[in-house]
Image: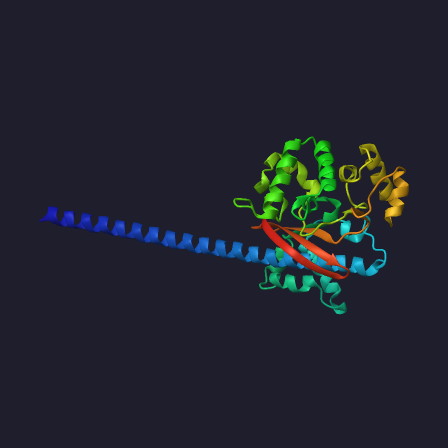
Length: 329
C-alpha cells in the first residue's frame, strides 16, 4: 500500500510539474506574441508617419518651385544653381521644422502643418520628433540628356544620337551599348511583337539591353521624360555641356561651367558670346527648366525611407508626374 501511495504521489507531482511547465510556456508565448504585435504596430505607424511627412516635404518643394517661377521674369525665365530651389536641405531634426512652423502659425498654415499632424497623436510625440531627421534636394532634370530626345516620331533623331555618342565616349562606355539602346527605343516606340515596353524611369532602360554597369555610369547624366526637352545651359554639368553642344571640347565645357557659377546666362546669346566659337544650340538648349526631381529622405527610430518624385512646372502650376518610395540603403 505504501508503495502505491508513493507511486501515486510521484505521478501527481510529475503531472503538476508538467502543467506548470505548460502554463509557463503558454504565458511566455502569449507575452512574446503581444510584444511582437506592439512592435509591428509601432513600425507600421512610423512608416505611415514617414509617408505623410515625405508628402509634406514634396508639397513644400512644389511651393519653392512655384515661388521661384512667380518671382522671375515671365517673359525671359531663367533657372540656375544659385536659386533657392537648388540648395540641398541638409539632414536636420524634424523638431526644428515643427518649432519654426509653430512660430509662423499666425501667418497661415503650410503643408508641413498638415503632415506634422501625423506626429501629434500621443504624449511621446515630442520626444519622437527629436529622433526624426529630414533631408532632401531638388534637382533640375533638364540638366541631363533626355533619352526621349533620341526619338523623332518612330525614327532615331540623328542630331541627338550624335550627342549621345559624345556622352558615351566621354564616359568610356561601349558604343555598342548605345546602338542597343537606340534599337530598343525604336522597337518599343513601334510596338513590335515581342518588343519591351517604353521605359518611364532610368532604371527601366535595362529593358532595352543596357547593362547594370552602363546604367550606373550613365544615371547622373541622363533622364527619361514624357516629352522632348531642351538642356538647361545654366545647370548642366560639364560632361553634358561637352556632349550636347557640338564644337565644344571638355576644357571649354569646364571653363563655361566655372564662368556661369559667377554669372548665370540670361539668354542663349550670352552663352554664344561666352563660348567664343561658332556653335549651334537653337532648339536644343535653353536657360530655364520645366522638369525637376524631388528627393526626400526621412530617418526615424524604426523606419528609414527615401522618396523620389518628378514634377513638371508650367509657369506657377507645379504637378507631380510620378512618385516612388523605398527603404534607405
